[in-house]
Length: 349
Image (cartoon, rainbow, N blue to C red):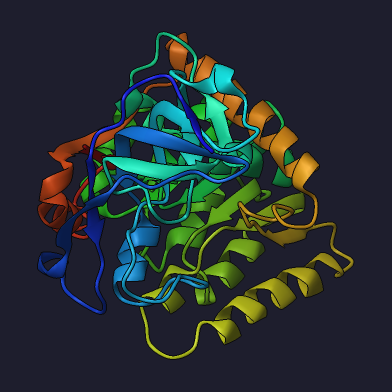
């Protein structure tokens, strides 16, 4: 038996990804309100968003995605309407942020309580949404994976993206100089943000980076993979760390994803064993979720808590590229996939 202190609506609206379709092929579905089981929360979704993960899932190119059809939505922010059996009834009415992988593009969603964090007062749902998965990823890569120190210089690929934008702000707050790799159309915005812009496709990128960091950079955050990862590792100074957090080249291609992922992980292990003082790692947001749940939850609460505090006091800002009603998810996804934006596209149920 679930517990709720508010009357529940009769139906829920959700977006369905039926198969390998263009954005226009997304479907709108009405159905019953889902019921939370033990350890779960029923949410009234206030904001969700579009990340590269959903764009990859549309093409069937996200490692470990569920079988079609399903509702996309990697994270969300909303109010708790009810809790599953044995749940903490004090959560009802609270605004929380949740990591979901799928299911966020809906007016109501059931989420795991252990993957949900209370949103502090003073932060709007849409602002909070921009830093849930993106903020945790950026914080953990900067402080846990690379352990970047004040005064160092880093190179960020995908600097105009959702993760990149938060990573830049967190790094600057930490006293770090940022070189941002992105398409030239984003360079003016990067300059205004205090970032040194470089064209990620420029064959002279290594020499340009060396002009700003002659001994090499202290960390590279690479979301491209393939040959770019090799170039990134070569740009590290002694003691530097390469953090690969996506392999866009492979995800955007064809064929099995298992090979490229295993190669990236194996490559990181091999490079870290070389006697040059450099390290490489493949960052996985969900590492430890299954086998070290208490540690995973502790880090999630600590790290997202830090990001929320910085967002609330204005140290970092939410970078929202566009807002769409949930029912216009097809148009929102098409815009997000245009790669012309700086920031995250938000869906508002």
